[in-house]
Length: 460
Image (cartoon, rainbow, N blue to C red; front, side):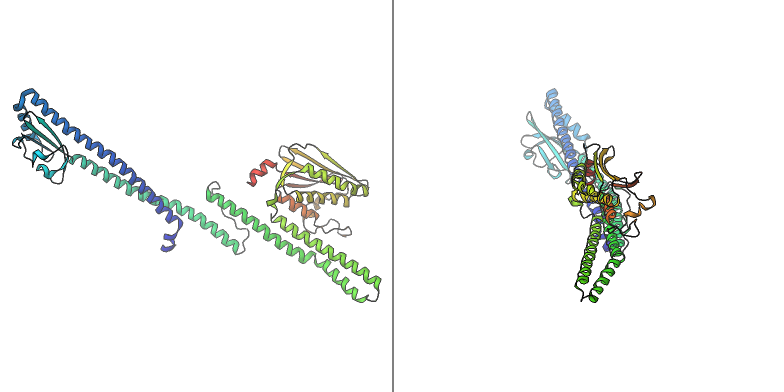
């Protein structure tokens, strides 16, 4: 990565932001700590000055002015003049004991510079004054030691701040670089998809953080895109291969119509055939597009709570007359209607089970029995459409779910071979498990759905 790209990268900005944040936090902590420590140290010097003045007052009370003078002289002689200054004089400013200071009568209790008391100009001093008998006492203690402690604390904070700045910068760079690497993997995956690799997916190492959830969302979107593209390709292939024959047949019919223009009856018959063939082509084409749309997941936005028992009741009411006309019995069985809700598209689910019932009626002989059964279990909601007709051989059960595949090779029975393909597409859209089994005799088609509450949590 070039320097300019590195400086503009997200993880570099993250590292700088983290380091500056730590630096500001340390600066704030130092400001508060130095204020507290400085105030405490100043208070200690003030108390020491006041305590020294009180001891001189005690000396005066014990032995009068002579004892006071002796105590001041003794203390002044042993003290470092840069740290402690003692002055005892008359009220007119005459020095009696201690060290001389400038304008002693003008000095008031508080903090003063060293120049005021003939001491180190760069130091600060704390003054305490007392009027004792006919004398005036001045005690000045230096802040040099507290200031040195503060300087040490400031140095320690500065060093710690620098160390934290560097560590935060390194940690931020490391964390940011790892995050950037994961973002780069997402970008690389999308680039591979753009180049045509529809199987490319973002590698998942931690699906529980924000980038992990983003990777999951990207992978879900790519899977959906792959399904859409595959559906489009499949539709194109199906149209190219499976609609070629009916279109050729329609073309032949139209050519024959040219040859019988003189025969009105034959012409009308061929026109009816052409119209029926065109309608069949349009129906097949619509079914292909509908399957592709369903496989792309375009109808998931219409999902809601749907009762399978209610759908079964409506289908039983609608198809019972059709089955009776074909000499068949159509029965409905509810094992349990409690908790039979699923999350899905009501119209698509109705079409799914209608296709299964229509297939059973179409392929079963007279006197056959067709049943639609619903129930609930520990693993979810299920619905079963079964009959005692000819059934489907075991080796054909997976193939009949493909587009245009028909067990009847002669294709004399009306149909496009898309009914069960549509059933599978709708089943997959709803995340249901579709199984075709031997009903001994006949066929049993069962769909197992995830319970409504669990499906709702997964969808959200």
